[in-house]
Length: 85
Image (cartoon, rainbow, N blue to C red; front, side, top):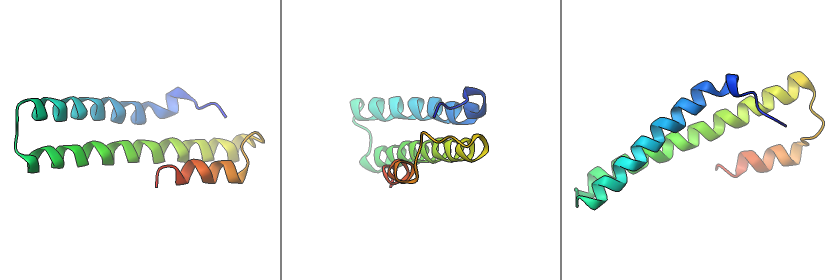
């Protein structure tokens, strides 16, 4: 199943923000910043990545239903979903 990039613009934007947040975490570690601040920022990156993954799977599921994509079976979709859990 191929995803339509135009439908995923919000996800792409979220991933770009997460990329910036991750760079900030690296900088914070290099600067010796407070542990609590680093972990808080890292948790934000993790949550952003999880949300992006779920949005990608939701878009894929929607496309499978609308386009009746027979290449993805239920077990494969379930495996994808659980890989983010």
